[in-house]
Amino acid sequence: MNYKENLKAWQEFGKLDEGLGRELAAVTDEKEMEDRFYTELAFGTAGMRGKIGMGTNRMNVYVVARATQGLAQYLLKEDPKNAEKGVAIAYDSRNFSPEFAQVAAQVLAANEIKAYLYDSLRPVPVLSFTVRHLKTAAGIAVTASHNPKEYNGYKVYGPDGGQITEHVASAVVAEIDTITDYFGVKLAAIDDEYIIPVGKEVDDAFAAAVEGVAHANPGSDLKIIYTPIHGSGNIPVRRVLKDLGYTHVSVVKEQEMPDGDFPTVVKPNPEEKSVFNIAIKMAEEQGADVIIGTDPDCDRVGVCCRTASGDYTVFTGNQTGALLVDYMLTSRDFPSNKAIVKTIVTSEMGGVIARAHGAAVYNVLTGFKYIGEKMTEWKESGEQTFVMGYEESYGYLAGDYARDKDAVLASALVCEMADYYKKQGKNLSEALEDLYEKYGYFLENVQAIDLDGIEGKKQIAAIMDAFRADHFDHFADAHLAEFNDYQTKESIDITTGVKTKLTLPVSNVLKFVFDENSWYAIRPSGTEPKIKVYYSVKGSSHKDAENKLAILKQAVNERLPKF
Image (cartoon, rainbow, N blue to C red; front, side, top):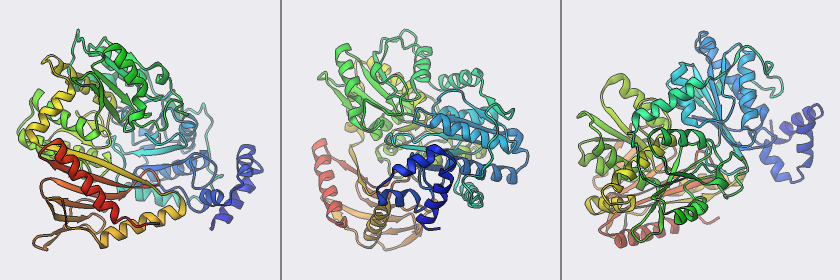
């Protein structure tokens, strides 16, 4: 159907649903109405994410109910025993997260599938752990991670606790597509016997699992400022830090309580330096050693550290990742087949460090689900021993208790690492400088270009086409060595012209690799209406790296189509 036919169907039902009808009647902009109904909210490899509101291209109870019915049909077709295994459901602090989680549980219950539903917000890694702990057939996390307040989302997890694979996602989508009536999906009563509250013992088991990976530091004098950024990390992060022996933890009161409007920040994203403004002021007053901030679903963590001059610097995800790689391989004993996993848009610095410690390095596509897949593969084969996985967008995981990034554990490991260096008379900033001097001055940057709506999709496609067709072969003193197109799965050795097949799954990503461990990559965002360009350079000094980065960015931007 075109958007007007979709709209008409929803307007007709709006006569029965007063709230739906009132919202649609209030929309006066034709382009917004078209954007709400011109397509259906895409269910990708991990689920859905979109703006909250009424329409087929929005996050609302009807879209959630339809997606859950499709998931239920898939689970029952795959194995009728999945009904007894059930589905674990958790949600974060975003607006309508509790309502969407409840509707999902009611749809599952109507299909006589057990729904293990948390009674209050929980981090995404807790959901991943819960699936594994309760041995459920699947999991649902209602969250839009670090997106702006207008968004919410719906992520689906497989029985290993990782986000579902492309094969499973395709099968679920096929079932969703059979449901043409958004308003005919059956919901069980809220108190249905198939809706089962998740008990306190699961929270306790999660905390024990995290504390089993981190090292305790009883009596630590490390001064920590923590902000949950109005999200789900407040209780579990503080609990774990306390259990591990950190008694000097101060919480940013203005950002402590869950609030889906995120009133103190523009975006609840620890990648944005401004989210730490209040925390840094507190840290300056208290002389704190380290600041940690977790996003709404507590799967990402941002880190700030006091420098030698007394001010505070905000680390990038790549910098924190490099520090953690070095610290994990220094502070723990792993067998000879130890390995780390990182994404293809993550800095090479962590890989260089890992190899220097005798660890193997595996690169996967963007998205932590690919790291989770590698963990499960190694668990079954014994080929490698997993040390840690991470991505430049502030996600980290170690241990074997979950299959998604965990800011609860990452917070504990960052504090453990900060305490370790403090006892040596160093802060994390100085420790990072030591790594630069030893392994080279790596510098990264991410450029995000917002391109919303129908026209935005066309512009994103045009940009990708332009870079596939035309790319430069050198910048500064670096020369293009390799061009990887993950959509065609083709890699070209620029020197020899030899083409080889990439082994990673198909993805709309282009990566241009230069000598000296420098590169840039370009890809459409999987969660927001934007295209991202990732830059990574290696220099002989900070200044040299900064100059190279500026030249590389200029070369890329000169080739961006002008709309």
